[in-house]
Image (cartoon, rainbow, N blue to C red; front, side, top):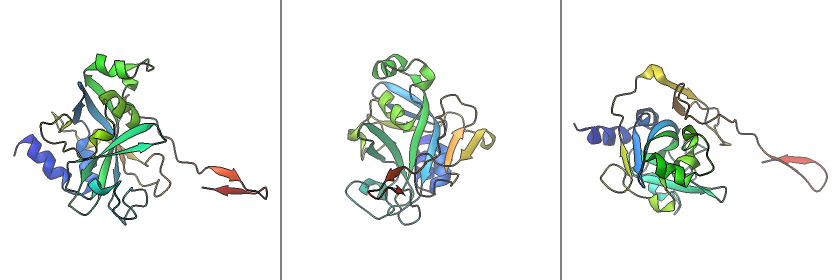
Length: 212
């Protein structure tokens, strides 16, 4: 098998091995290449309350239902784009969020897009920063990532050994946030900082508080 075929096979399988297998791989777009150092797995519809497909298919999440190897992008906080790689069999709606990476090519281009960043290690340190460094936005939604198109996902040049992969809880989700489905290259400085989700409180009209 070719590396591309191996990656296609990996992505067509269960989401957790697919997430681990993306570590050390590269994503290229807009004149920049990022080596993936942190990812987060989300299972299919009905099985993962943190998944965007948890309540079923919608126009927003339809690409998550497969086939594997396509991009699922979403807009968050009214200002940021984040990108997932669709995994699993058609109909499963599982995906891997690309959380962080190291810019390994096109450094000057990435800097021009992230002018406020002082350290190169922070250019793609976080899912929104990664998309910004690569110049990705909603136009990437539904693009096939394993071909020779403008957005290209490639497997690691050298396989990543299990002992350098760390796992922990997911970031910024309200449901199943303690599942250890975030994976990263242990000790890599481009990995984002972990922040546990804390439910916000608001004051009610009667003076009490409510959590959301």
